[in-house]
Image 1 (spheres, rainbow, N blue to C red):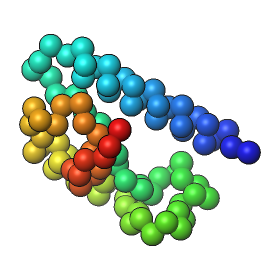
Image 2: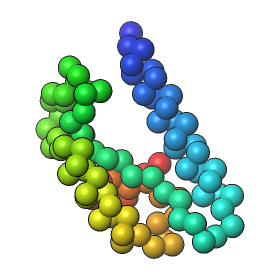
Image 3: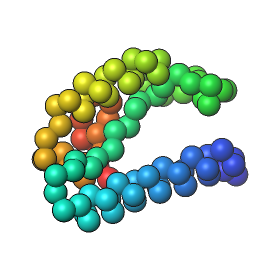
Image 4: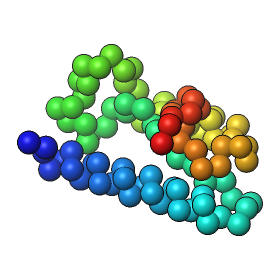
Length: 93
């Protein structure tokens, strides 16, 4: 059975992905629309999920934000409509 937290998270992620796609496809230019996955970030929301067991490196919110800001400073028109990870690598939709 899927927990309520998981359903809420999945629904929110789906809406954000669709919003990104709609904004990008209807943009008349001049505005870069894309999404960045922040990685596995240590937050209070993680609670018991803080130990992901998948081997993915966890990071603090401040560190994740700094890395994502660095990625954002390098974006160009070719990134429009894309989904990137916190290090700027493309993630397939």
